[in-house]
Length: 339
Image (cartoon, rainbow, N blue to C red):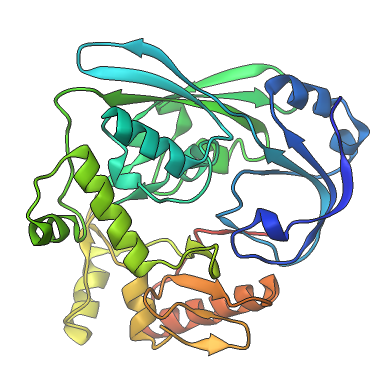
């Protein structure tokens, strides 16, 4: 029997540590429980929010609906070839714990995605990525349950419509599909190690070690810990903004005024510019306003020092966006879901 609670605090369920309440709240541990939930009045009559690790969400007010906490668990090998392995992972598994499981097993492909917060189920929605690797590079298929019919659906990699921090689950199928599992294709031999992005190569050279699944994972963890605050210590949701992509001619004009502006070539005469650099140039890095602020070591990260509200963080984000637009004529888009 599914248990639905009333007026539940969400503070422990979001990494910003924002105090907000859910009018209704339940935890789902199996597909059968979800199908049971779909038939309840609370589901049929209320708005609903599917919540994984709460690492990519900002509550600006109480949630006047049903919060569905995902807690499906399980890892299963579904296929194996000479060089690859297919692994089906339930949506409630913690992403970083699964990455560490793969590193321990010497399964390659996601070591660059170490220490990203959140759950497996949320990973394809956002098409998580870091250090030159994105989830779309290894997804074989995503399985979910249609929240209208209760029927199971499977989406191939192509059907997921993956883009930069984008997917079909974030747009056309937003709030329509409950992701129950993700199947990944990982390497067991002839690994394609990626050390070209960020400071990975520098860390490996400094420690005088060769690239491997384990050493790349260790390097990424070291880099992330040096830049990003631990949500258990200080409330945050990691990178708050996406790195914007601008036209090449716009970038070249900016380079005349700001010669040190970094840029990474993208498709069709576009350039990706680090949002953190833009924010830092506008002098936001390390700034604090009451109990919210911008992290001292990474300008992309907005933080809650303890008792800040979601509305205060949202207002700070809007002020930062306005400042960047005024200075560079570049619009910043939040990576975090704001409710």
